[in-house]
Image 1 (cartoon, rainbow, N blue to C red):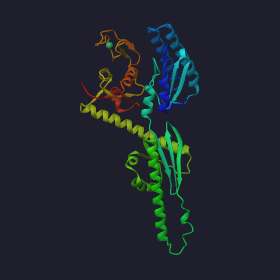
Image 2 (cartoon, helix red, strand yellow; image 1 turned 90 degrees about the horizontal axis):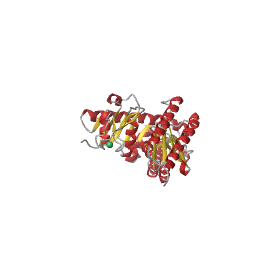
Image 3 (tube, helix red, strand yellow; image 1 turned 120 degrees about the vertical axis):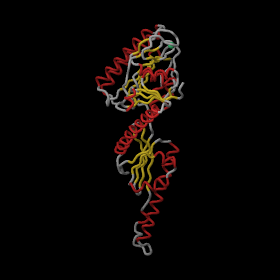
Length: 381
Ligand SMILES: [Zn+2]
C-alpha cells in the first residue's frame, strides 16, 4: 500500500501487543542514487546487523523468536519485491507472534533502520509527511479553469469551471454595440472570469489547505490574478507551468513535478546557506560529527542537517543511549560503550525521538565542507 496520510499512521500506531514486540523496518530503495545490486546489499547488511543486535538482547525466547521470524519474513519479502520496485523507500511493520504484517511503499527515502519496540515505530513516516508539500495546480485560459491536487507524485482533478462567453456572440453586428463597447464587454467578462477563478481557488485553499500554488495561464493573466488573490494565495504562488486546460493531467503533473524539484533544490540550498551564515557568526549552529553528537546528546538540537548517504562508525552507550564518535566509556554512566556501524543512522533515530527536525541534504552541497553533518540549535550551553 502506498503511504500517503496521517490516518495510516494513526491506524498503525493503534497496534500493540501485550506479549510480543513489533519489528519496524525501513529501507532506502532510491534507484536514482543506487543500483539494484547496492540496494540488495544494504538490505542484507541491515538484516544481518539487526539479527546480531537481536541475538545480544536479553529477552524471553518467545519474544525473540517472533522477532527473528519478522526479520526472516521481511528479508524474503523484500528480495522478491525489490525485483520490480520503483518507489523511493519500503517499510514493513511485522509482529509474527500476533500475525501482524503491514507494508508501505514510500515516495521518499527513509534512512535504513530496524527498530524493535512495543509498537510500530512511526516517526520516519511522520517525517515523510512533514516534508511533503500539497500542491494545487490551477490551469486556465480565457474561458476555462481546472484545478488539480498534486500530492506525493499523484495528480487528481478537484474542480473545473467554464465562463460562458456565448452571450456576446452575434451581438457584434448589433446597432449601438460598436467594437469599442464590445471590447469593454469582453473585458468585463474576462474580469468576472478571473475573479470567479480566484474566489474558487481561495475556497479550495480553505478546504484543502495546500502549501504551494502552481499556475498554468497566459503570462498577461498573472497581474490580474494577483490583484484578486487573497494574501494567503499570493504567498503560496510558487511556480508557473507551461500548460493549458486542454492538456492531460499527466502533462500537468510532469510540469508541476519539474517545478517542485527546482523548489526543493532551492530550499535545500537556502537551508545550507542559513546554516553556514549561522556558523560564521558563531550563532546557534554546530558542524561536524563530533560537535553535532555532543549537542544531540545534550538535547540542544533543533534541526539536524545531514548529507544523504553519509555514514560513519561510532559508539553508543547501551545504558543511556548517548552517541559518541570514539568514547570508550560513557562519561555519564561510566559503562563501556558499544560500537555501532553507522552512528549517523543512530543520530537520525535519536533526533526523531527528541522531536527534532531532520533534513537530508543531497550530496555536493556546501554542507560537505563542514563534515557533511551539522545542526541548528535551540540553545547553546
Ligand atoms: Zn551512558
